[in-house]
Length: 250
Ligand SMILES: [Mn+2]
Image 1 (cartoon, rainbow, N blue to C red):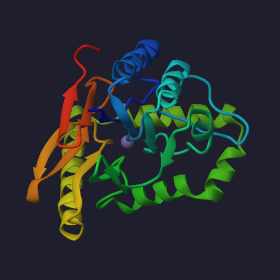
Image 2: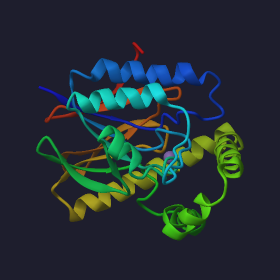
Image 3: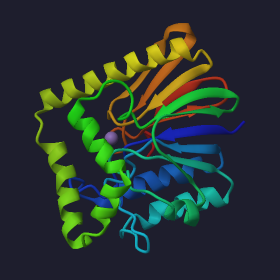
Image 4: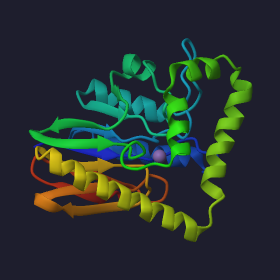
């Protein structure tokens, strides 16, 4: 029986990744390895470290990765790409070119007869007002129009160095605390959500860069997908059980 696969947070193209081709190829080899087994592929955000899609023009890079997605889509794999906080500005290009579905915000979906709540993880639970405001700007049509009217010569370096700063400015101890707090926030949200939505059996997130698979009350589970920067983790669902795995052979 074919399975659903879930990955997140590869941050392809990030400035802090030294060998970008090797990084991309690792993900490409993984996708190649699942192409016969996968019925559905869920990309839970921050797959690209930065992407801004203009009406007539798209950013350079990621050719082998996007080609592999196209190959899977052509072979009949249904691909869903949930936008993260780094790849917010995917619009219709990959939908039209590859045939994947772009999804914004947390969404309940039925996968092989079982209901999942899926989200990148940045839009559920309590977030500080400044974070919510930034996120609102990112998704606001007028802000997007204004941003797109600035030449990418100016916006591209600012956006990619901002992403790099966000990653390197925190000390390891602070980063670990932020990630644990984020796990807790997702667990609290999922537990509360499940009380009002008994039909939802599994909760799945990215964003945190920690790999976690927890039991929630009532036989539910919550999975946080880790990343494809140094963990190479993915989840699968076979219609019965969610498992969190490590692509050790990659
Ligand atoms: Mn994220």
